Image 1 (cartoon, rainbow, N blue to C red):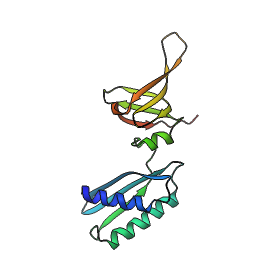
Image 2: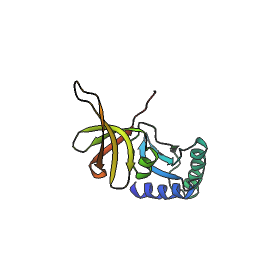
Image 3: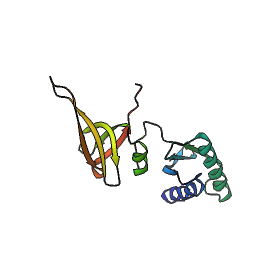
Image 4: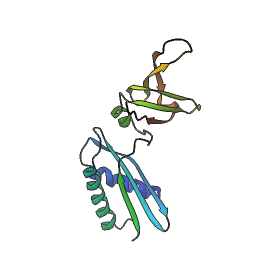
Length: 157
């Protein structure tokens, strides 16, 4: 399945609408006798339903033309939801200015506003609350290697 997943990922990259779009994940699984292909794409300025539909049509055609899967398969092309962990530097860049909950490999959770991100580190503005004192803010830098996962926090303010 790994070879098939990589083949499908290359096909998706070929059919992305433009350079602002990128592949987040491709999953290929067997479910109830059918192959289920999940393709998650994103874009620097957000992904549209039209972009997902375009990629879906192109990949479906490629899968059938090249006979990569059996007759029974399910193809789903979507953007990652807000509860989906960030997995690439481009996703971190896209979410600068938003609140993140970062789970570290050590088991510690850190929440704060994403200020900067590159391939090696993530900088957050974290609120420090001490009993009986006014809350203060502190910038902290986290090495990417220490991050287990990061989730964008939805605010309804």
